[in-house]
Length: 446
Ligand SMILES: Cc1ncc(COP(=O)(O)O)c(C=O)c1O
Image (cartoon, rainbow, N blue to C red; front, side, top):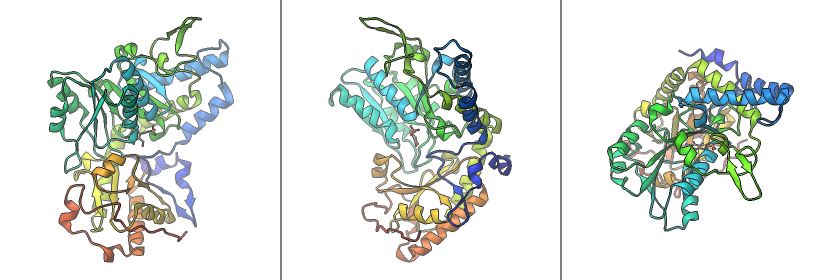
């Protein structure tokens, strides 16, 4: 059981007020999380006491900074259950990690006629880099196919089986959807791959899972895994790409410059060993070091405890939301299949208007397409509202959220405008929600 009240004291921002003294209720954690004071203090300490470039200087500051930076690689290795530090590459974020892969795997392994499988629930970060690869190779040379989702907003594993063939070279899939909250069974996917007579590489976008549940790169049996520091109490500007060492060694470098070379001559260059081969230029030293403090913090709380707390918050919220019988809620019905993220919409009120009114009550949620436009199309909705939790959220905050939602819907007289019939609400994603037809309001109550 987490002592949430004690934890919250580590996050000064959670004590601030919004507008006319409304307490901040921060439910936009899937976008980015708040940072505890230990992370902020690590940043200050680095800049005040040992700021220097790494891997270059022989002076004391350079040595201290290099050691601190490389120690975080070790922490990430332990945190994510990788086999060695060489399997851990620092990038700027998940997006850059996937771009690195799309570029380097494309250069090193893909040829005309090959296929890449994505799912219908991907974030743009796990779509656009693969389209860019396809377009670089000539639009007809690489095919991108999508594994569908079923009526319970889960991956259709039987379709995945059918889609894998000898041309499939990469399957790149989110571990947890940033819209539906659906947690995909990566071990099952890797079993499906193994049971086929083909061997595509498995890339996992863990941006929404690594912060919220205990992961083991080894156990997941994937080839690559990407996540972002800023979604797990760390600073912005730091991402991680975990990958099998032998694959990293065979891949071409992504960016060229300092750090990533062993030797440069007037004729050419020899790349550095992994992981540095993929870390061109001065890295984000301060933020990587502070990310180490974020990992320490999460380990201290315990990823299992984080998961359990978020599961309880999710169950509690889904129960409370039942009273809004005019709301369409997306994501698996079972809370343990969609932990920590609740996305909803109503055909009458635009999600931006819901979010704007909630903001008046100090409640921060996200509204929009959540960088998942293909998924929005699949759901036949233009935009949705999303509440997303972290371990520092409380049940009292959920009550404030529900209260604010009640006021928002009263303001728009939603119940009177449109009441979705029960069977419509429980139908699959296409149930009576169409962003194009939704009447849009522009609130001016601020
Ligand atoms: C599932 C998923 N993948 C990738 C990303 C991209 O993360 P970043 O913006 O840190 O690169 C996000 C961000 O919200 C995400 O939710």
